[in-house]
Image (cartoon, rainbow, N blue to C red; front, side, top):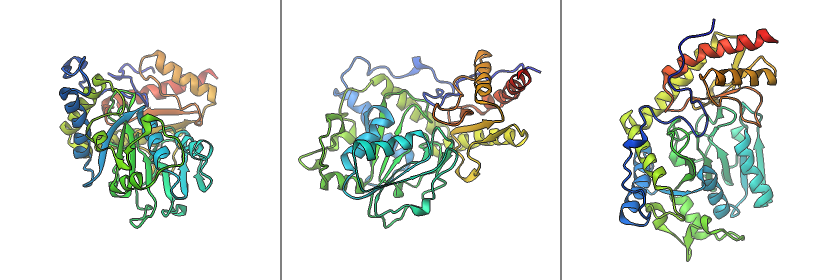
Amino acid sequence: MQPSLKPANPNFSSGPCAKRPGYDVSKLDLSVLGRSHRAAIGKKALKSACLDTAKILGLPEGYRVAVVPASDTGAMEMAMWSMLGERPVDVLYWESFGQGWATDITKQLQLENTRVLNADYGQIPDLSEVNCDNDVVFTWNGTTSGAKVPNADWISDERKGLTFCDATSAVFAQKMDWTKLDVITYSWQKVLGGEGGHGMLILSPRAVARLESYTPPRPLPKIFRMTKGGKLIEDLFTGATINTPSMLCVVDYLDALSWVESVGGVEGTIKRCDQNLATIAEFVGKHDWIDFLAQDETIRSNSSVCLSLDLTPEQVKSVVKLLDTEGVAYDIGAYRDAPAGLRIWCGATIENSNLQALLPWLEWAYAEVKSAS
């Protein structure tokens, strides 16, 4: 039978993601709107975005945080173009965004001494093969595949290379060993449900040393430049952005950080993600027509949950459309490059009660499509 209870919020998109529970745009501090980002009021807000991030995430001493252009993509490109080339590179991918970084490194930067380690969707490469004497580029959590690295134990404490980690759907969702990471990037619109267009770049002291000791043999666009006269532009890491940011997005991010603190900090947001994954896992365990794309639960994402159905790709599209039409789940089709299936965002801003309300509808939609074939 068709369920009667619908999710109070049907937004399960993997980016932009659902706003935090209780979000009200009218409650944001809008005093910065219409003001220069270089005025004292703008600088204060941007500096808070950097310093509050470092505090809430518990970053080690000496790690720097900057707000940069063009979302997580901009932050990753900025780091790779500015720092790669000093030594060989190992780049890992098991989904579309990681594959994009591999393409940029081999085809755009044209770094010849590069090893590409890859795996199919739902799996990850053999991490024991990684050479940490090389620079290592990887995604922590594969947003389009639902597979993540289980931990950072495979990264050597004695590494000679830098680790470049695209962590856009992992930060605030999964426990991360910051001491193993030298360059970390993410965007506001994932686990925090913030607005798009801005990236966060976190650098370890080792990454700063690379910037100050290595000059890449390529032109760098203005928005990629982090040094001047061979020294780090420290102002970038206290809120002096390279280009003009949206101050509305900045205060929205500060609101999201305040919410993180209200739910118990990063431990609280991770717990919310874990609870959401557990709810889906219980449902999957009771039905033989649905399964996780990531079969190994140790690498299974708790934020971007990817599922396969025993339906044809066209039937899967029908399920997605039916749920959308009924207003119970928006934007949950698999990423265009991924195997046909569902991708349900389970980040911290998703209320578990909404997931519980969605799952009976998922069973109903499957039955409707299956019986119609």
